Image (cartoon, rainbow, N blue to C red; front, top):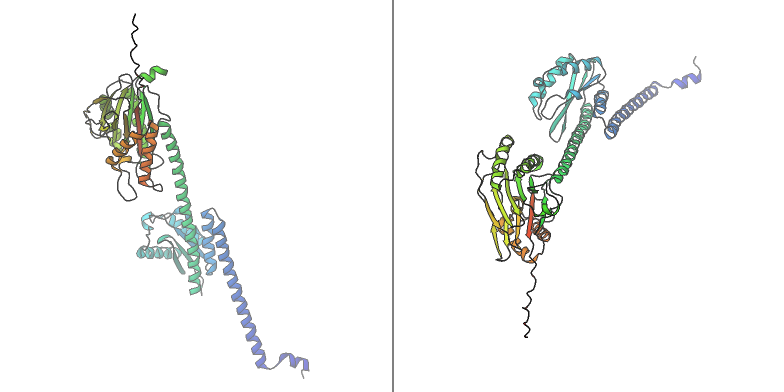
Length: 470
C-alpha cells in the first residue's frame, strides 16, 4: 500500500495534466522570448555595425550572416550592383559555407550580360533568381531587393536545404529589415564616394584657380601718362576670361619701359570652368610670344589664329580677343578685334562715348582670316573701358540682362564724377552687383579693365610784364 506522502505527491490525474501543460507553455514562452532576444541582438549588432563601421565590405560581410541566422537558414549571398546594373564583383558577399562560396565563385565567372539588372526590371530579377536556384540545387531559396531612392543597389538571398524549413511572414519582415539597413549602408557609401570625388575636384579647381590668378596680372603696370585698373570675377573658381598688359620690349627697365609701347589685351574663351581656363592659359603663352615680334595688332591676331587653329578645333571652342597697343609719348592706340566686345571710349572734352571696333572673326573659327586695324589718339581725361560679355550679359533678379546700353550710361555717369581709374572700376562693379543682386552668382565670368589718360597740368597764365618807361 503506498504511503500517504507518495499518494499526495502524485495527485489526481487532472492536476498532473494541468501542471504539464503549464510547464509546456512556460517552455514555449521562454523559447519565444529567447528567440526574440536573439533576433533583437542580431539586428542590434547590424545596426551598430552600420553606425560605426567605416569599411563597407566589413559591414556587408555581416549582412549575409545576420540574414541567414534571423531566418534560420544555412547560407546567404549578397549581390551588389553598379549604377548601370552590372554586378559589382568587389562587393560579392556570402556566408562562410562551402555552398555559398561555390555560388559566389560561379557568379563571379559569368559575363556581365548574364547578370545585369535594372531597377524595376522584374524579368531580369526573376531570371537571376532562377539562375541562383540552379546553382544552389534542391532546397528553399528566398530573396529580396535592396532598394534606396528607387534604385536597386543589391539582391539579398538566403538558402536552406534542411527538411522542414518553413518560411513565415516574420522571416520575410526580418529579411526585408536587413535589406533596408543594407540599402542605407550602400547609399551612404555612394555618397561618401561622391563627396570624395567632389573634394578631389575642389582641390583641382583650387589649384587651377591659383594658377589662373598667377597668370592674370597681380598689379597693373606703370605706364607713363595713364592710370590702369583691372578685375576679373569668375563665375566659377576658374574661368575663361583673360586680360593682360605686355611690354613690346621687355628688355627695357624703369622709366624707359614706362615710356615704351604696351600691348593691352582682353579675351574670352567660349565656355566656363576648367576647360576654358586651360585653353586660355595655352593661348596666353602663344599671344605673349607673338607680342615680342613687334608686329601690328592685325598681324598678331592673324598669326595667333593660324597657330591656335588646330588646338581650338580639337576642343570645339573659340576665342574672342581685342588686341591693342598704346604708345605713351604719342598717345596713339592701335587696335584689332577678333569678334570681342568693342571697348568703350569716353571722350572727356566732347562728353561723348565711342566704340572701338575693327573687322575680324573669332580666333579658331577658320583658317586664313584677315583682320582689320584701326587707331585713335587718346586725349587727356579720356577713359577707355575694356570688358567681357559676362558684364553686358549679366542677368538681374528680374531676368533682365545688364546690356551694353546700361553699361554705356553707367560709364558716362561714372566718368563725370570719378577721379581715377580704380574709382571708375569700383563704381562700375558696384552697379553691376546691385543689378545682379548681392545674394546671386554671376552666370558667366565678368572682367573689366579701365585705362584713364591723366589730366595735363595747366599752369595759370601770368600777365605780360609791364614796360618800364625810361
